[in-house]
Image (cartoon, rainbow, N blue to C red):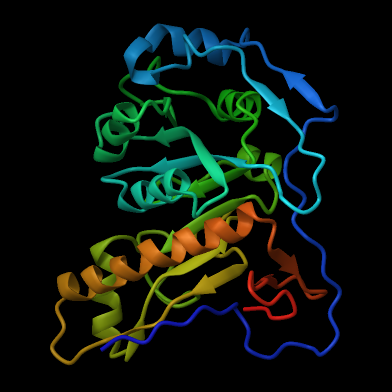
Length: 288
């Protein structure tokens, strides 16, 4: 039996709060055209089909929507290392209208992973990051990655099963605009080396009665950024790591799409103490 909740990293909120919304990445003028002439573009042309559409993409034009009532569609870059099931759900949400955004780039450290194949089959450009040690020409450097993300007008970076540490250059270039999903209730069961099935084994060995996904903002360390949302999943007696993983993943798919929808609609607010909250779409006076 599962119980599902959506909540921030703390439970007690002050009666009066000062709210400020996340400032999305916006070009300084109403229309800003991009051309590709950096080292990153030259790299993209070298690897051809591995970076589909980067070498042959048409000129990208980012337009700033002046409407205050309906935020413009946000541009999303998703990072994956495996099958990318969360990435697929986010892409589906963009396609069916539940998310006011579009996945414009897929970044991976494994060019042949399932997530990369799905992206290519759906016309989404694929970038390789970081550079592979054995194939130094097959991948972008941190500065090249930031350069390409900016040229695509990316508003938010979403980590969805990406197993590499995000470089400082990227964190600094996209402050409060990088999200990660972790398959346990942080701050417990997080940190370097705790990913995938290892997380669920650790949960069961601890005797914890609840687990579930956590979505948090990304900083320079593993799993230490501000918590934005969590969903509780009950641990059943005699659970196996695989059984628990399956139930947690089911919640991940729902929670990540909900949070991405909120961030694309500019419904993330920041409390005075730095805790991010999600504003209810139905009741703007209510926060999670």
